Length: 113
Image (cartoon, rainbow, N blue to C red):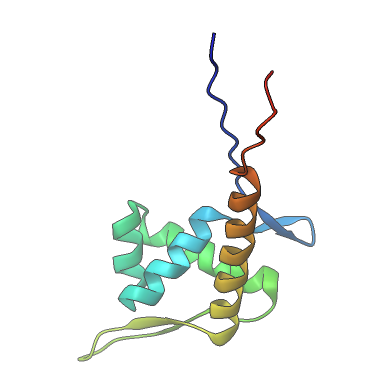
């Protein structure tokens, strides 16, 4: 009988004992980066705008620096932008996830449970 095994990992980064970054928060940051809008990013994720704002505020508070900058609209509408530190954190998170994925997908030729 043959068995198909797979390993999967989900990385959660904690800061001062609190969940700080994970797949959902990284996705939110990436969507804000690509759309320039918290409203559009949350809509694409099926998340309420209010929840997205809460998540962003909490990340900014826990980290102690803004990861997302926002501005109010008027005639030109509001917007949002990922800060340089936010960009660095996204990139580092993705690098580590890629390394973990590579580690977990290595096939062991003599592994036969």
